[in-house]
Image (cartoon, rainbow, N blue to C red):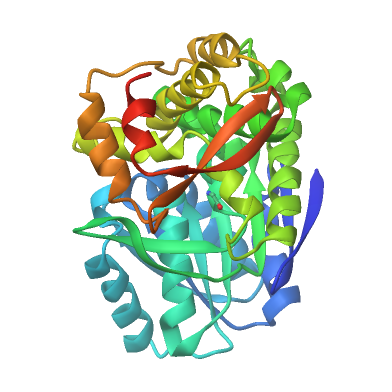
Length: 349
Ligand code: GLY
């Protein structure tokens, strides 16, 4: 088992280990006392992990309510968010109570935002059950739902009180979901840690997930401690994401986030090398890592469409955009580029 303490506007532990879901209840009692909990989960995760989470809370003496929503990105909406808030209000949730996000990124992001809004803020616990949530979205306090105009356009920085990652939950992930999480792990390797990249580039990772997840969380802890509110270094985590958001949108969200990030990293590396911004061409290594981890490397969308969508993305500031480029493998930097240059970058798809 690994325990990593995150220092941000709230200090909290990220605990990673096999079979630790059973300890959810006792850990929550020591944080919140014998209050009440609302477990928030989706229709898929409910089948696998709800009973264990609920049993652990109840055995510890915590009265437990459950809010289940339909699995999928469509539920990351203001409608589901407000259904959850109404549910909490109808059940007279107070500021001594807490929410438990049991699931992947959609569940964690939406539950965190609900916790920030409910009675102007109640605590919440992240229990990530997808690899993507374990290595990235459950840590660092970014919460959000989507609007019609785009993804994550309404949200808050709101840190959890605990992140409890039971690596056994990865066993019920479909292969495609596992691959999506691997894209974010490859991303952490390219941005910060060549050793991590080399560990995962061959794709044979399943026996070492506790260490791999813990390393990603350490890297995220460091960047969140420096820049919780995403004004500087935290934007490095957007490596591959500028084009990824366009790819997701061009595909009507048929291409999942991790696959889009995998393609976006290849485009960013290839363009950075071709435009003379990198000291090392990282493209071939990223392609190899993607392929070995069952991730795509290219897409068929028109470069102009990809650039148009990237321009409307929220990361645009005035006439420039912060674009993440790999200097060398294991070290990325932010480069302020004129927005028009996105049209050139998209040509390297
Ligand atoms: N997922 C990127 C971040 O938390 O900043």
